[in-house]
Amino acid sequence: MFKSLVNLFFPATCAGCDALLLEGEPVVCTTCRHELPFTRHHLDSQNETTKRFYGRLPLEHSSALLYFHKEGIVQELVHNLKYRGQQQVGGLMGSLYAPQLKSVPALQSVTDIIPVPLHPKKLRERGYNQVTEFGKTIAAILGVAYTDDVLLRNTYNKTQTLKNRELRAGIINSAFAVNYNDVHHNKHFLLVDDVITTGATLEACGKLLLQIPGAKLSIVTIAYAHS
Image 1 (tube, rainbow, N blue to C red):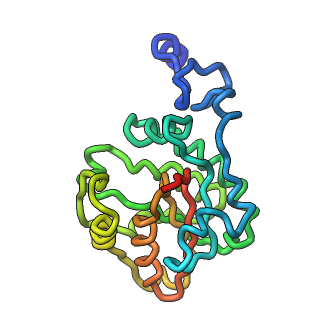
Image 2: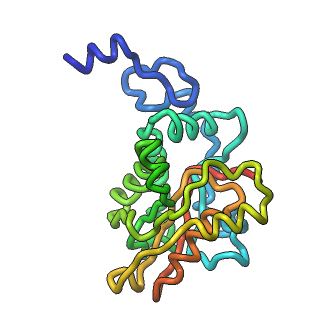
């Protein structure tokens, strides 16, 4: 009854186009779902995301679910996820991708899903990490642990947009820390984030995870943007 009243006065809208959602359309309308630009990276071990990290990180697997284009559906989805509190977008993306990831041989040995962390101040400001629901959903479907206390962000930066690439990379490399003990040895970590552009943030986080003895590393993101 209460839910019906809420829907009456505050009808759910599509996170991709803002159209009213019909019964049975969770988060994204049927039209937008059909227009989602899937990468199919998980079917190609030499995909664009993997190539982005050649010579930078030794990876077991790397892929993104969607292509990110300016002014496109995916940009709107990520914006709603990141800045408008629509964490259900991350859950939906995880539920779309995890069944595909289960079929990837290189990911059969994954033990832990690791989110790229936010600085505690940023986490307080936003109220949530935008990749949490994406990561937790994948972890639940793959039947592995969701571990958010190994990677830490120890610097707070409002934005890196206006900084040149070399300076930005230097800042990012010093922004994170890793916290581990014997329990974390010899694990296969699947690092997750929302969008990959240059890959600098994921590279910095990945290098830290690979400092853990016996660690293996894979990367999965919601979207891939051409830098």
